[in-house]
Length: 116
Image (cartoon, rainbow, N blue to C red; front, side, top):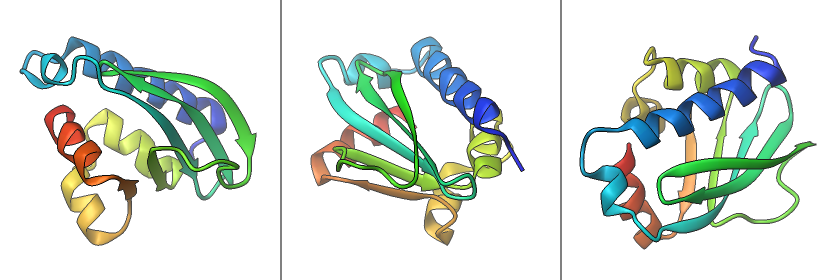
């Protein structure tokens, strides 16, 4: 089971990966600024922050589910978060199978599609 520190590190690596992306995704979301929460279900821990211009900034880590409703909400196990970031788990397949939950408005989903 992934630790809280490993999950935080995975979110930092994800942010770095998005920033270094060579496709139009990051350029296509310039000005995109949304609140973000990632609930790691097996640790019952939530990371909150912002997704701004293709970069994730984690501002806080709290026990339990998200206290406030972020504009983009993710939920998964710590092992799945680490596997997603490390390339061992395909996001679309994990989302379709229910291993990863992603909730956001329709327009936000269209922007996110450019990044993932």
